[in-house]
Length: 274
Image (cartoon, rainbow, N blue to C red; front, side, top):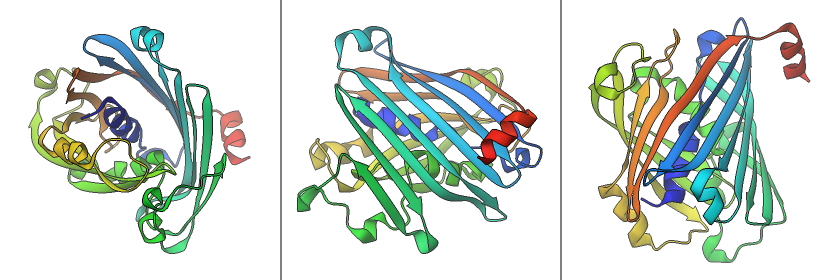
């Protein structure tokens, strides 16, 4: 598994709310540290607001430590917003803002009936035919955070599902499969409430612009990421608390550095409605 794909998978899992918090208004914040071969690599910070039947979440991914010093600049932001029904999350829209080196790009998506998607690229995106995402592959796909929000309420069933992720240039399936459960002590997550789910996670390319060979991408099936999903509060949601992914250059490890949830203030509720 490449570093880029491992980072995509963690960013995909980095947040998803519990619907039981939405009625009284909750604000969730946390952060992840990702190390590569023992050195600091990436940080993912996230926060989200839930009030009534609405949600609004955002994340920031950036380099730190040795990786920041020796590689090109990278920073990504993802926002997702929508509502809740008895069937779960109903995404309304999502946006991505990425800066790689000195090249920024943004992508915004609005979701319609039947899984339709309308999108805006800046700068304009006019790929050659081989890198185009066909309309039938766009249908039902979501930005990475909206995709996580759409499946994250599965609780104990979180491991056995496929999410259709789209970052505007690449359509990828994120596939999770349960392999075992562990106690909090076995998992190394003492703050977990009850058993921890341990899952395999890998990505499958569907359409779009990819830089590695198809054979390399398919080899990830034999070396998937392993992710530990734990309950950290009184909701049914399981948060990703640890991950490991083997690459040709070393092992990527991620862990939850901090997490908190609190009631929203009246001012925060007003700001969310704007």
